[in-house]
Length: 422
Length: 81
Figure 1 (spheres, rainbow over the protein chains, first blue to last red):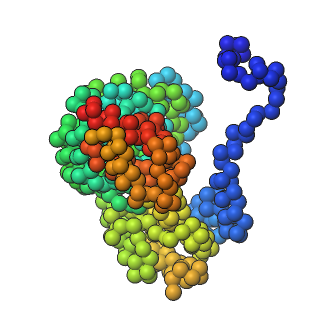
Figure 2 (cartoon, helix red, strand yellow; figure 1 turned 60 degrees about the vertical axis):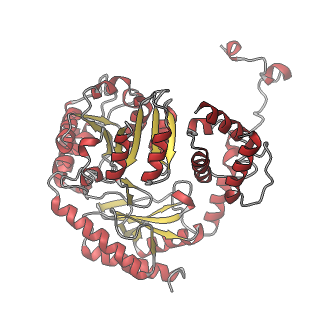
Figure 3 (cartoon, each protein chain N blue to C red; figure 1 turned 30 degrees about the vertical axis):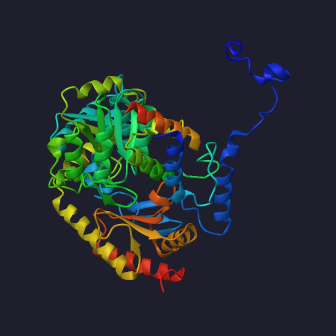
């Protein structure tokens, strides 16, 4: 076997030292990142990417380093993680079906619960088909890599989530990007495409870094007019946009124009998993050809049971939706009043991104907030657009009005403590 | 349009992103010499696409490392279109 793999260029053949040490450590490409990280931690700050939750008390409270901390960076928008019905469903499934399926959806890994959660999704979205993946990341990997072939085009927003880009990289389609949320730029690129080959435009309802929403009505109209199929990722829109909580595409009134909606169980639904829903008559064939669906184990029975129960409850969560919007608008206004710069002029979603000038201020502010008793996400390039440093806050319908007041007070004291606010 | 015209136009489009004032030749590398990150590449590619009314897919971008390779690719795309 080694003989077959050898090539005429194999240095081992020339030197005769097959066991010599490798000429170059493959890890050396990470040296700059390792040095930057060490310099940051040497300055005495805590590691923003190494936080541990010792206990989780509720959707909005955890113990971090022995201290009760308000959670403001969890995407747990609807606070379903501690819902008693959801927990009971998971407990029952764990007892009845065991801890895991140990198999692929297409072999031994489809239990009653996987069909039930797909039924719950079809009912929630009013679609003919629903396909559940083991994570939201895999749902995007699966769709992008499978639905468009070498002759086809995927047209995506430049700020698309990593899972969309990675799905494109896994597949063989031609990839074209347009400037973030720019309808005119999208149309220009659609017009330039050759007539042959299929087209899929990929959009997101809410963009998770800045919390801004897409002009879906206009983008969907332009995409349709140029003969494209449309996929909308509603990972951050499910639960509280639209009359039924389906997402931004529902609120934009384009439900009948969208071919695929991709979503996740790890945000509003409150567990883990991903899905695609669609009305396309041939949709079910994806179960046979989609590698990130076929070549991985399915979700554990307890997870699909909690997801199904949560989705059924989300359908009737109108009051929670209203409270989440109230919280988001109040925090946005309050942070602006304190003198912080936010990524959007008003709250467009339950994600509020506080823009800060550089890494040093951002890390110190993050740490000061944690010490004051509130956890937010720190985000930095290359995950952020346009080289931004930001503290990303995501609200929960279970945050009380009092907690929102406490959060604002903590932002004020932290901002003053590091000298950012005067 | 000749290669020289294309080179001149592309040089003009590079200018706003050429922070270090690197002298441009066909061998100039976007990553190594101009030190562009992926965000800058995105903005620049969009500008080139709009200037020449062409589509430069991400698949093609992966093969283009130098200014000269970009000039050739733009010429090719213009002739195909």
